[in-house]
Image 1 (cartoon, rainbow, N blue to C red):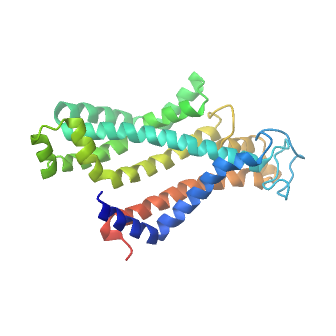
Image 2: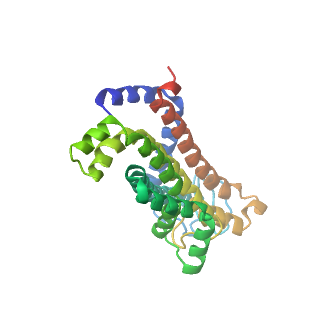
Image 3: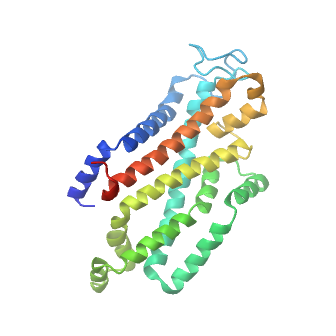
Length: 284
């Protein structure tokens, strides 16, 4: 993207209410997840207060049935949620880009082989595979959870990137680079990828949000990391210890609202960025 195009995109980005609102929400929650744990001198699962205490000046989000600080769990959970989202989203984006770029540019047998692999992974019930792997292999760490999420979430991105690459490989600037003897990796990185930078960024945002939802689902059903705390694990503990039946709304509403806010804000950001990058959708 040239300097003039960057300045124009920045101008419309600052004027786009969806993008600004979504960015602010994500930024506030991210800062809370990064800086929030510094406010506490106790671990999120320590027993520090009275049992089932409602929100107060001392315990902003109240306490659990065991006297654990819900606000401390919430900010620690935000950090874990963002971490698994970033790791899973980055891995899925990298795999999807490699497969999509190579298949779209090379064509022929490479395209057929990679397309077959993409279709195989695409039809696999990803959540079921993750459930089996987590249940039978005992994988209960954020890193490995993000690894499995990333390795099963890339096919749709690869297919979309392949289609975009297929349309770009016949452009004049790509033909000129090919005739000049530029190697395939450099053509993809220097000629094709920059012309898809906005699309690739939008794809990563969607993969980011998807990773958060999948991780929260695994945590909620008890197949998440066994150590630490996450928003999904908070919901799991709240359901296990009958928070709804006991009227402990402050235990399950914050993590549910946190997950909804992050994923919803990412979706709104994606819509806003689409309007910024697509001149036909821009708000004048």
